Length: 493
Image: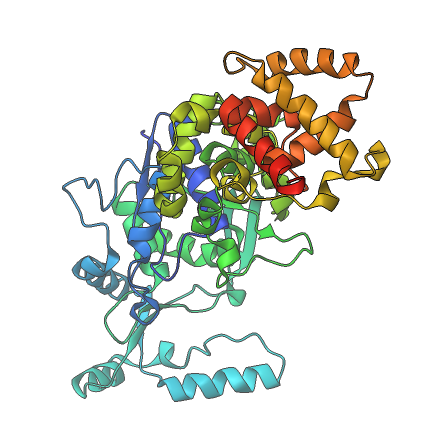
């Protein structure tokens, strides 16, 4: 049997971080077993639809390389993937459940149901349907139907029995049928609820494994009962733990800080994001932390997924991302930077394109050791891409290094300028710059920092920047000389 997993989102918002983990686990499991991963859209709740959300999800999944084998963008000709286009199918199976006496018409008004819930809450009772319409006679049902009284269809839960199913993560789960609500399966508008539609679709689409987050565990007994009613084999269920903030509160669905798109906008690398998300609630039983997508596929095991909630820690994600940046080949990371800027920061992209690629790569080679993600890069490169400006005289001095007056500053800037002017060509590496300057500073009987501090400030005009040697290597002889001359001219003209 071919393993088939699915991700079945509702088009109600953007792709969340915990939904990304659900997608990832479904994807890893399917690929590990040489199976297929499917995308299906559960859009039957018409009151909550957000225009463009599914298109956004598909785009984001492509951005993080989790492309479904089957779905709206790459369909298999047998069926539509939007549940709103499958209403006739659900109606057929609703009629079958009613015929088998596994479901029944409910004619209760929304006002009655609201009052029922209020009364139950006031009495500290579980809020569920009181089965009023379950025991209507056939004549009463027919009369109401002929009178066009609006109705829903509810699941008829068997009385006095245990509903048992096995979960890969949670093992054996047993629920008393008296604690299972008689769920609405078909709404008054003719659309199915999630509970009916997902069972029917999972069966018809040959889903073998349902991997979803833990909040669906309480609904699973209802789904098991429907599989039994249809005489269908149920898929294997795996309910994965919730994601929590560091304060142990559940990640909210309605804040932008849980949207995957936000993390892409900030410039997190796909491989770092996927690597980190995979480890939230899953222990690969190794001391290694960094895995390629193929390594994740090879190692993934649902039985190693934790039962308790996992902490989503942005600082931990930063650690993963900075590690990937440091280890990445410069050509690879430069191409990823351009792709990122073209999508999220076109102005900075255009600015970089106006400079030679070799120059941009020199800058990135230096700063990839300092940044955590791409969106930090622009603010750290103003001295590489901006016009020269005059540094503060106070900034040029440094009491700890015994650079206490501008005459000393001038002396060391002139030394640096003379060294640069004596060079016939640009330096080939930072080590070349270092070898030249260490020797000249030693000849002057001074400490490296006393010369390099004012040099760095004169080249960058900032309190914080890469070191003087790195600045001279990246800027090159002509620009470095020009900036030093400008500082000397401005402060001592």
